[in-house]
Amino acid sequence: MQQIWAIVCLTWKAALRFRLIWALAALLVICVAGLPLIIKDDGTARGLTQILMTYTLSAITAILGLATLWLSCGTLARDVEECQMQVVATKPIHRWQIWIGKWLGVMGMNAVLLALAGGTVYGLVLFRTSKLSERQREILHHEVLIGRASAKEEAQDLEPLVEETFRKDAPLRLTSDQMQDKKLVEVFTAQIRETFKAQRQIIRPGYMREWKIKVPAAQGFATNHIVMLRVKFMSTQISGGPQPYLTIWQIGKPESPNQVRGDKTLTTDTFHEFPIPASAIEEDGTLTIRLTNPSRNNVALLAPLEDGLEVLYRESGFAVNFARGLAIIFCWFGLLAALGLTAASFMSFSMAAFACIGLLIVVMSGGMLKEVVKDRTIFTSAHSEETKTETGWTKVKAIVDVVMVSIYAVLLQVIQAVEDYSPIESLSSGRSITWGQLAKAYGLMWFVLGGIISTIGIITFTRRELATAQGKV
Image (cartoon, rainbow, N blue to C red; front, side, top):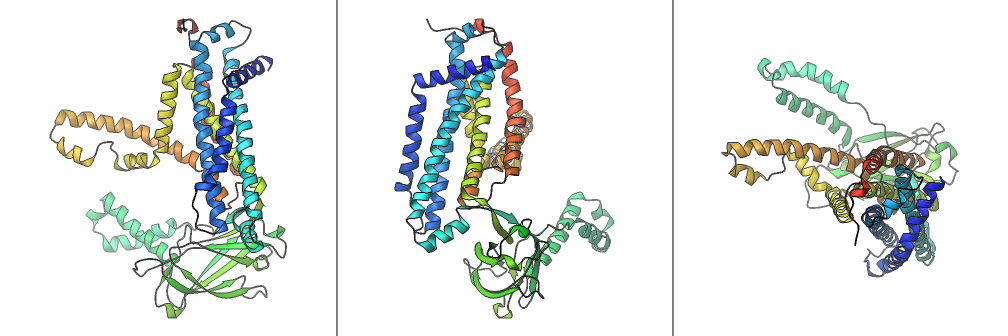
């Protein structure tokens, strides 16, 4: 560890000598303090707080992310180009120790800067909310400045029902030749599946739908514990926009004295949140919810299976949840630092920085990647029509499509896996970032992706001939 610590100290000294840390610290504080002055909100305390955290944390992530790539590329590539690394490599130290020391040095600076910026955001949020009315502060502490976990109805496996219905109906509705057509069979099966989904989603006028949701932490709730119900539904009637409808709710077991009943007029295509008493939850953690669509509506309502209804309950306070969110952002920086050092292990500084920033731009273009993977081609349809008759070019295009679409598919899977652990949206909406999510994020980004990238970088740097690098005269 003595050799690694020496490299960490040298990395810090280089950053301090070039005043990088001071410049980044000043830039972060200016962004965090200046953004709230120019950002427009919807006029509510909830909207202001959500926008404040979203924009400030996004700015912090972008600034420190680019700085991490730039510094990790420069700290190794520059040392090689200026022949400083050739001197260090002659000391009793292994190449992998140099690589790890550089990574730890960059991450140490990230930890200090992220703690400074995160502390500023946290203090700013508390300062702004302290000036609000008691009613607004109460709303924020129940909906935004909190870590809320989510409980949903357990998804039912519809496939056995779909298969059974297919076996009964297919011989009656499809000919033997049609049964051999795989695409037609897939369409018929999809129709059956959607029919079963519709039966569970649609609530006709005068009918009711029931949910039974397991709330894991219900036994630890106090009598006055506030649980939020988040609901969204749609209308089967075509309209120009969201429409209000009367809904009748029954919260709790029907024969229980703790059951709560109430009427609410809610608009379609909009998420609504309203509190329900924790006493309505049974001892085993089961919460029974019934939604009735009154006959007077004369319209069937549709509650989606995926996000139609969920129960939100307190999992942690804002401080703990905010700290876990910063820890995931720090995890991202570790992956970027490994990527930058790996590129610098065999490239010059300019090429390494260009390659890493270019890859970062590709990663941020997730929508374009999705379109390419979906269409199975990187060429536009108009271009494809023009070259349809060109046999030679068509073969080349097919080969390019196979290679590029495969690469894009892998990149898209990696991007989506990393985006699943994005803490910014969770923090701005008061969602809990659990310790389990934090552990999975570090396992994926540091031990799996980071481990692969770091291994490539260390092996490449170990085998590199440093004597061939040209220094400045």
